[in-house]
Length: 428
Length: 157
Image (cartoon, rainbow over all chains, first blue to last red; front, side, top):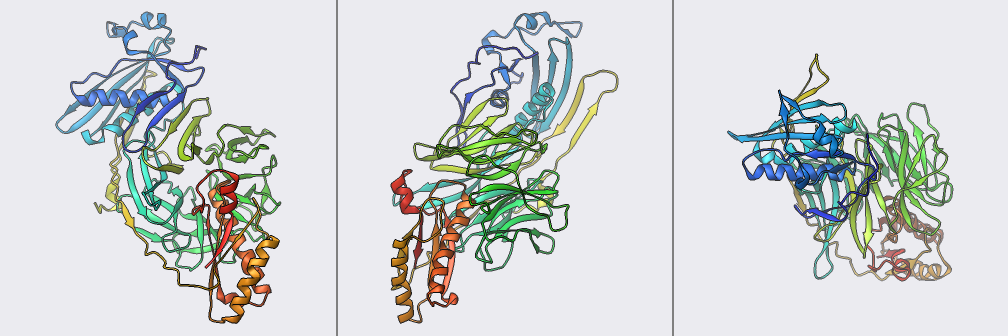
C-alpha cells in the first residue's frame, strides 16, 4: 500500500510559530501513506486554523504525504457512494473529508476516511468541544486519522514539558518549566525561577509533574499540580534529592538521594512517604526510570568504571542490578519503549560525541539514531513511535525529534534555550 | 485559576463500533486543560567573606584530586586548622558533556573527594557542607576544551 516516491516536498517548511517554539519539519519518511485531505468545510476562520493544525500534525508524524491542495479533485458521490477511481488515478491511498460546525458556543468536527484501494469508508467520527479548545479538537481529529490509517495511536493531543533558560543582559539566568502541546503551541509557564530546574517528569495521568529545583540552594524534588499550581517538596529531608520518575500506577516516585554523600536510588511511596533503598554501591547510581508495566527499573551506574545502563527486577526480593549496555564507555539516561521491546538512551561514540541510541532486547547491537554533537535527554512518545531530545546548535540548546520511521523535526525556542523535554502519556 | 484537580478534567469518551459494517464510528469530547503558573525568586545566598576560598579542577569524567588540587587544598586545611570557627561549603561542578543527572552525581563525587581529603588531614566533617550543581552553573560558557576544563571544578566557599 505504501509506495516508494521521491522525498515529499516538505523539507524545511517552517510550519508555525505559536508561543515560543517554532516547529520545523526537516525530513519526512521515505515511504509515506499518500493522503488526499479535502479541506474541512466550515464558514469561519476556525475552519482554516483547524485544517492547518491537522495538516501539520499529520505531516509531522512523517508517515504521510499529503496531496497539494491545488491538485485536489472535486469529491464525486453517486448514490451516496464515493467515486474512488479518480483518487486511485492520483495514486492516493486514503481520502479524508470533513466539516466543522461552530455554533452556539460549541465546536464540532465531523470527518470520514475512505480507503481508496479497498473502495470503502473506514471511519466516520465526531469530535466535539468548545471554540477555545480549537487546537485540542484539531489534534484529536488528526490522532483519529493517524490511528485509522496506521493502526497506531496518535500523539498530536499529547503534551510536552521542557525547561527554558533565558539570560538577561547581565547574563543572569531565568529558568522556566514549560508545558506545551506536542507541536510546541499553546505554551504555558508552570514554574519560573531564578535557580536551575532540571529533570521534569510527568505523572501517568498527566495532571501532575515532578521536577528538580535548586531554589533552596541544593537539588530538591518537587511535585506540582498543573491545574492549581499547588506544589510541595516530596521529602522534608535536608539532603540533595534528584532524578524523579513516576511509576506507571502513579503511586511511587523513584528518586536519587545523596544522603550518604553518594547518589543512590530509592523508591518513595507517595501515600505515606516511605522510602525503600534500591542500590547500595560505592559508585554513582542515578537516572532511574520505570518499565511501562512497573515491574522493572532502569538506571545509570558508574560501578564498572564508566556510566552504563543497569536493570533492576522489582518482582524479586533484594533484586540484583543487571548490566544491559556494553557498547562504548558512556551509556546513560535510558528509558524503555512503551512495548518494552527496547531501550532509548544517550550513547557516547568513539569520537567523543553524544548521540541518542536504541537497543532492541532481541538484538545484540545498538542503533545510533542521531548525528549532532551533544544530543541528550531523549523522551519517548507514548505510542513508541517518536522520540524528542535536546541538541545544541551554534551554542544554543533546542529540541529535536524523530520518528522510528525516519521523519525528523526541530523545535527551536524564539527566546533563549530549551532542553530536558518530557513527553506526556496519552491524555485522551 | 485555582480549580480543583477533580473538576479540571471533564473527559467523556464514547466509542461505538457499528455492528454491521467495518466503518469505525467514534464520538469524543475534548478535555478541559487549566494551567496555573508559579514564580520563585530565591534570595541570593550572600557568601560571607571566607578566608578559605579556593577552586580546584578535575579531568574529564574523573573525580580524583590532581597534585595541583592537593597543593591548593593544603592551604585550605591549614587555614581551617588555624581558624577553628570556619565552616566551608564545597560545591562540585561538571562540564556540559554527558547527561545532566549523571553530571550532578559526578559534581557530588568531586565535592566528596575534596571533603575526604580535608577530613583525612584532620578537619572535622561537621565543618564541611558538600553539594553539587552538576553542569547547571558553568563558569565559562563556551563549548570547547578550554571552557570545559574551567567548568570541571569544585568551589570552596
